[in-house]
Length: 278
Image (cartoon, rainbow, N blue to C red; front, side):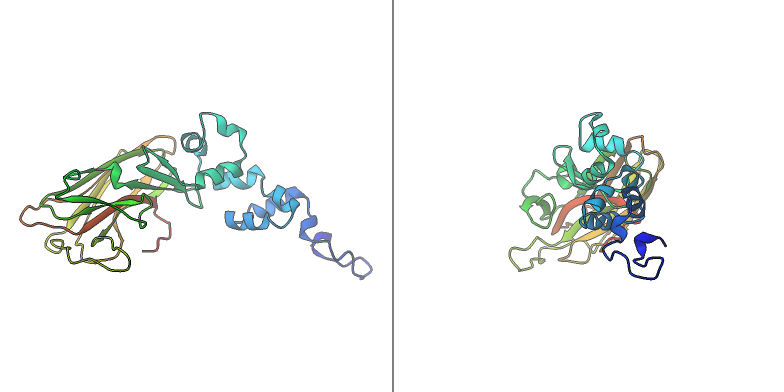
């Protein structure tokens, strides 16, 4: 194993009991750290100065970054070219921090493994009747990362549309609408008595991607008082360096009945392999 892992000398007596893993050269420590996940690397970096210095090695962090990390860093963190002055550990940490753009209507961050997650607020969507208070109210809510949700009182024609363009790293992604039946409660009380019309016809969700992929799904909304992610479908990004445009929508345009009592928060895009708590 080597002297760094054993305190025994050649004559069988115990050597310096203080010797151990921390006595390895920094490049050896960095090699070991490279096999670990980022949270474990950061925890070990607190042990001593040797671990801290070793944990900053670029070759540890570069494999954990998406291949287009320079584009993402320049887009989300810095001005053009400034990322060249930073270490890969700093770039990794910066990309993992949520960043708002498009006037604060979109939020993006990187998950462990280099996949990108994005939230699109209802504020960044086109919603039929959103400016008419007979149909919609804008309600402050701590249950939303954007601190406000759109609440539908009642309407005949529900139509929500949105789009985005972004350099997603290569991989498989899933798209969800985040919504809830029932007005967000004040205090601990639940107010779901205004929910109506969603059990007659399903809501249709769909999206199309600039690479030609598209998906659609239909959901009856019948679970009140709980935020839910309605899965629309999955798509695959193959070119990390080309901006991908996505159009998405949510509709229930059967005008034979009114529907109401719906809280709309956002659209969520994430790597398909991400373990979501549903």
